[in-house]
Amino acid sequence: MEWAREMARRLSLAVNGEKDRIIAEYQHLSGKSAATLYRIAGKYGFDSGRKRRSDAGNCTLNDHQLQFVSTLIQTTAREVKGCILPVSEALAIAEDNGVIERGRISDGRLTALLREREMNGAALDAPTPCIRMASLHPNHVHVFDASICIQYYLKGRKGLGFMDERDFNEKKPKNFDKIKERIFRLILADHFSHYLFVKYYQTSGENARMTFDFLSSAWRGSDLEKAPFHGVPLFLLMDAGSANIAKGIMEFLRWLGIEIPANMPHNPRRQGSAECAQNIVETHFEARLHLEPASTIDELNEWVSDWLVHWNGTRTHRRHGMTRTACWLTIRQDQIRDLPCDEILRDLYAEPEVTRTVNPDYTITFRNETYRLKHIDGIGPRKQVRVILRPYHSPQVGVVFGDTEYLIDPIGKLPGGFQESAAVIGREYKAQPETAAQKTRKVNDNMAFGDEKKKHDLPFGGTLQVFGNQADKVAVVPMPRRGTPMEVSREVRAVAIPIMDLLKRLRNAGITVTRELNSELRQAYGDSIDIGIAEEVFKKICDGENWRSAEPIANAI
Image (cartoon, rainbow, N blue to C red; front, top):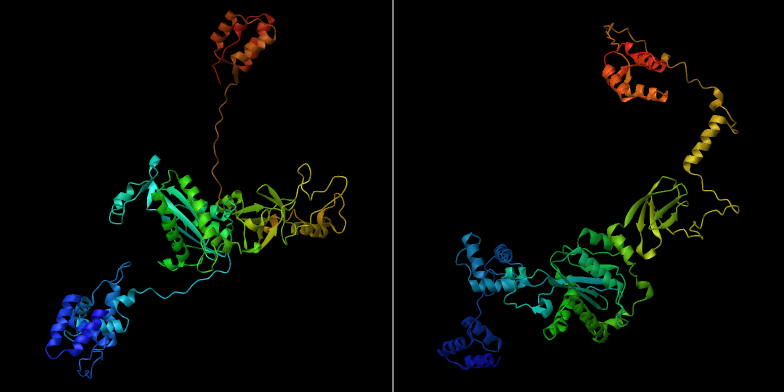
């Protein structure tokens, strides 16, 4: 600073009375205090000639008092802005609470002491020390991040509507409510090569379906020959968003064999690759949308895919000195884990593990395939096993019996759809291994019938007594009290048949039942007739006699 050198030179040449005038002049020019200006002049060679005080630099406060002031500054800080409490206010609070005596130290001296010991606000706001993280090869670690694309939103046929930051900010949240569906930018970065994959979604908010679609799209890879990136990583770094930590997504990642390292809360530096990628896409791709806005989300994704081919394939990364595409291509074949088909992915998300009951032929069925389990120790029909999808070994599956998991191949098919292990009729004979129950039955038969069981043989040679001695096992029961006889009344009721049965019997006997006869019989006996009277009436009508002499009785049903 030339003015500081000039001020130091003038102060060194000044005589008594001129120094205050010179300092006042530079106070007016710089806005700094006299003490600060003298300190600056001292750095550039000015010496006042005064002797240094013997107690200069000695702390007039003890460690507890300084720590108390620093604690006040830290505990009143804001999460984003950091420390906001001035030292003067902290000193006043300490004095009001009797921690520091009034007038013992000035604001400036306390500020200097806190700065010297790195206990001031600037020191407390400094970021915590961190270490650099390294990955071993492409697809070893992927970093995933989602961000709301607040720079624009789809605006019907007019393409993209750009947000005015003066209207859309945290102080005007109601303006965001006017936009029902916003554009989300999802980014995946390969930590080793920093190869980028980007996809946009138009939705009202983050959800598990969007995360599932994005990750499966990224790991499936692009159809473009100039975009070779594909494969499932061993580790995935991502923030703790609600859509990411949904149980379905976490289980889906676990079944794919992906580990999610634990993350410290509010630690965005772990997502450094993703944050850098977000900035790259916003500044190098989205800034172009002001010049040519997209009208649909599909058009936007086509453009970003085209841009990514150029960015990944031409821009040299400072860390490894290669393009991102060239660096990713250094991956070995054994380091690429191809993503399973969509059907297996859906099963991994919805039902990655099921329970099956072993069939009598030692097989189970799963996803239209048959698996034979007879080689598993202790297995048998009706046993329960757990079947687990193993996406990188399909069509093999994991079968858990007891505490052991077995990787089982499906049984092949013969012409006609028969199992490959089936015995061909007339050519061969195959037997299943004996189960524990079968072995037990053989031992039981040997105990009951000996080495040879003959027809009609009784177990144990008929020597067992199982009848005739059961009552002897019961103690004598004392005679109970005599009960009261129950009177039962018997009501004799006449047995009657419907009158229609009589009429049918007459017709079957060849008698013509005229309307007059039908009417007279119903008038005499009603809808039912005593079976004895009916027999007498039937006989008299068949013999041509006068049936009316038969005595009618009351109707009974």
